[in-house]
Length: 161
Image 1 (tube, helix red, strand yellow):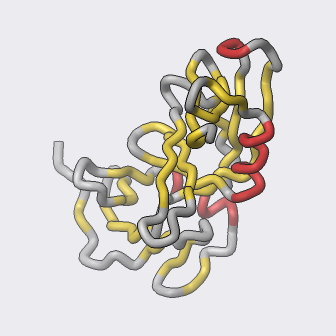
Image 2 (cartoon, helix red, strand yellow; image 1 turned 120 degrees about the vertical axis):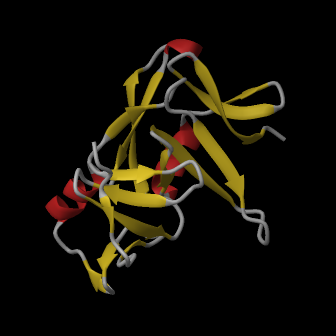
């Protein structure tokens, strides 16, 4: 079996705001972005690639390849029984839990947090502020931690103090 041919250029870029560009021009068709997203891969070295059976093209990703746009409670229960889901900008729904944890990263200069949801295969979605605030509304203090339950996992947003 032969490996896909690697393209010499990395003409595709995903910016922090979730917009995709090809050779500097905006890819404005959502259907095309969704199609590309089905072949987006992240390598162990952190690089991103569009991989088809015949070709590999490197993708520059400014932050995370996707955005988390909407949070929804699937089941409102006590503690670990609660399920909280996230919709991405490619209309993918994931449920926070063991397979899809939440990661909080503080900006080195400002200390302001950014939230990232694991989507699988090393791909992540950075949550937009409205989704972040919705998670805060669902959160509670648990000892020194402040966070929310989903699918049996307590996802920490920060320090309760």
